[in-house]
Amino acid sequence: MQMQNYKIHPDDYSDLLKSMLYSTILVIPAWWIVAIPYLILFSILGINKEIDHWLANNLGISFLFIAAHFWLLMYFTSCCKHGVVYGKAPDKWRCSICKSENDEIERLQQIAKNAEQLRSTEVDRLEKARAKSLKYLLSMEPSRFEDFIAKLFTDLGFDVTQTPYSSDGGKDAIALKDGKKYLIECKKYAADNLVGRPDLQKFYGAMAIEKADGGYFVTTSRFTDHAIYFIKHSNIKEAGIELVTGDLLLSLIKETYPNENNIKSVNIMCLYCGNVLECELSEQEKTCSCNTIVMNNITGRASLPKRKNSYYGKRFYRKY
Image (cartoon, rainbow, N blue to C red; front, side, top):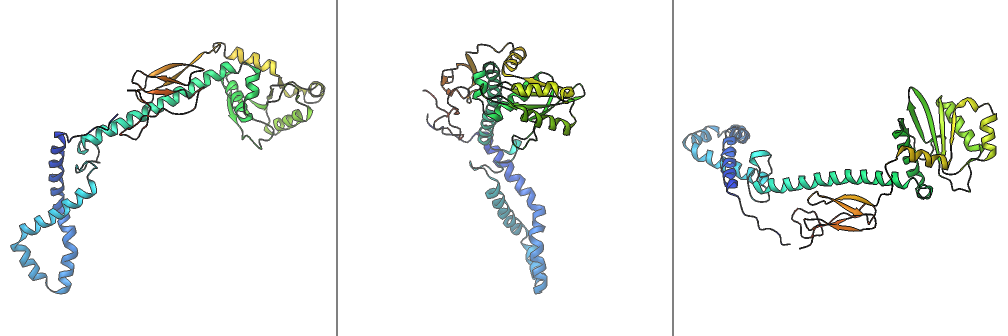
């Protein structure tokens, strides 16, 4: 694709004449701004009478001299890259080419914003479907697992606030519901790595400090018999600690997200025209109707579309 050869629009000449008139009008107050320092200097040197006499006889010439200098100053400081005075100014003074370029940039920025929102929605929808598998939950990073559990409890009607990923004081999130306060602790353990009594004791201590009404200890694994006996037969059995094992967690996810099943495709957006395309999970890219190759940045290579030889600085790969 070749770069377009832009021509000056007839409206630009009108803008140029208006800008010149506007600059000349501004010279009237600018005359005194420029002249006052010289008048003070002439008064100190004692030649103010001769200068006043010269100005009286050559007022028109001096006025045009100042106007020309002032207009040149305004021209070189305010013209756009297309040579239009006040070309960078807003609204009616702006160069028509600059307007079209700015509109194109704003259009692409809005499409990019919409594409990111769509991507976030699709990633969330896909993750809800995949999270119904314990294998997928175990493949998550610990921080991502905490984020997902917080999102799960949010969708269950809790007002959830997550704590820092490290040095969290024995709790990963604080949840509020119906005027009561609950703590949430997450442990992404393999099936053979059981949650023991020390983890529960630490969680109970955090509940006591926060004065929580209850708590949810969520794990992808199970709890040791010693830990379960500790909960049932110690003084903390009235603390309201719910033990959520991996099987119970999967059941909770399926009940909360019953519609996210067997997702075979995702929606991606063309960053050049804004069209939404349906893309198979295994596909790396799709070709839009505008001949733009849109990369699958959800399940494929996480890269943005690029356009060759773009005048606006954006790069998309397009077919011609």
